[in-house]
View 1 (cartoon, rainbow, N blue to C red):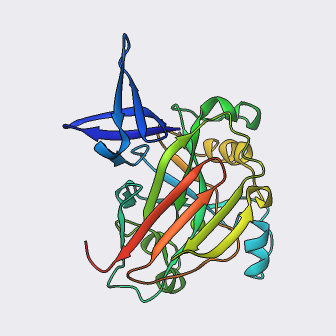
View 2 (cartoon, rainbow, N blue to C red):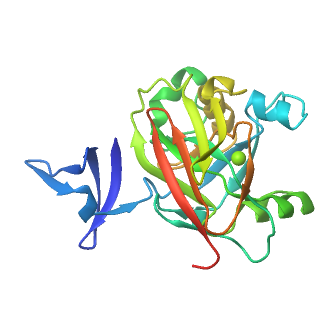
Length: 246
Ligand code: MG
């Protein structure tokens, strides 16, 4: 697992091994204790492309048709918080939901990538919480406001290996230790190579951009004080608390 860290005003990537972080300095390695470093979001994306309605179990739960093309929206980079950051419950909303999701991190600037070449532009995988003000989403015609509040994009904690087989990983979300979402990435309607082909046929993807693959069944509400965890097998555990104010 690769993490992004800050120490003494220096930002760097390091390999996380147990409670230690190994930083490659070229001719030598530095070793830090994980606890001594500030953990940053694994990347600073120029954009986050989030796929809606991409799990068969979630579509069934909502009584909606399986879409024949991916439906997606953008979340602004200003919504990203660090893996240990706090989700701020907006005053404007009375109903905020978690959405546990598997995110793909793009490794290089690219356009028009075929599904067969998709692996060559993947930096790795991480956990994502597509926090959503559901009442606002229902009220507005489009989704931007409901998805874009500051802190509504917890990302991390680390970058899992791009060679990881993500076709059948357990994905779970719990709130205060209680299991709420329990599915597998095998339920994805549009898989990651297809999403990269489809999205990169529309827009240029930059290094560090995020494609989040959608959420499974079991979406539900968050309250101030809650601790929400998104855990994906062999990818990581993303844990954030909900607060009333920053
Ligand atoms: Mg979502």
